[in-house]
Amino acid sequence: MVEKNSAAYPKLWISYPWVEREERDFGYLVKQLETKNFETVYNSMKIMQDKRLSQRIVQRLQSIGFDGWLYVLTHQCITRREYTDELTSAIDQTILHMGPRFPIAGLMYGIASNHVPPRLRILPCISLGDPEWNLQVCKIFNKNKSSDPKPRIRKESRFVWKLHPCYGGNPSITAIEVRSRGEALEDWRFAIPKSCHPIRWGQGNSGGGELSKVRFGEVTGTGRYENNEVYWFGASNTVSITESAYVLFAGTLPDFICFGPASNSRGVPGKMEIFWPHREIKSVCQNDTGNSRPS
Image 1 (cartoon, rainbow, N blue to C red):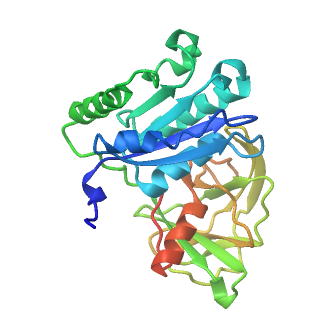
Image 2 (image 1 turned 90 degrees about the horizontal axis):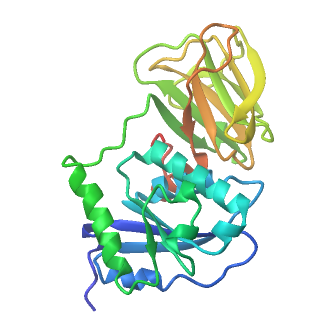
């Protein structure tokens, strides 16, 4: 048996979001795209009220390193408002995180393009009733690829993130560390989902060092990130290349963690960077290392 060298093929992700029930199994689309030299992964995803679809989509696209995203559009997209709202938000966040040239398209099943909500018609919509729908996917992918002659490079993050399982030798505690790439931060803030509760946070030596027992200018507050209620907190202990900010959790980690500077010692968070800890856990377990790649 000859093993296919899939690394040479573009990798596409097909997601099928649905609300109440799956209308059918769209896994058969994978083989039809493989005939056009795409490596394809398919996932069915139920839209849930307690977990934003946009977070799940972006996390999935970044964790595997996909080269394009296709989403199945069914009758639910024109009859369920929550479907349209969640998918639109996911598209916006994907463009924000993956870049405007990242190939994205809808695959229409059992509906016509004029029935698709206007907000979803901004991007290409391909009818699965067309026998050559997979050729249209090729055209979209090649158009995006040719419009950018330079290789797509993920923008370097402002901060360096590291995940430390078994922090301090305790298997139940995970520490998330973040430090600057150069500039020193005097006033910094974390933000996490309001439902999550860190067991400790503060500043310490980079590389998994012990946290300082003193926090200067400690401040806390609440706010919103997209539709999520968040709890933010921070201090004025300097964060630099050699000094990091830490937040410690026992058990389940939050879906996301934000970090960034504040305008002054009592100020609210300014522009923040997002870290997705759950995809880093997989990396840590596979590589047996505390190093992680920033989002």
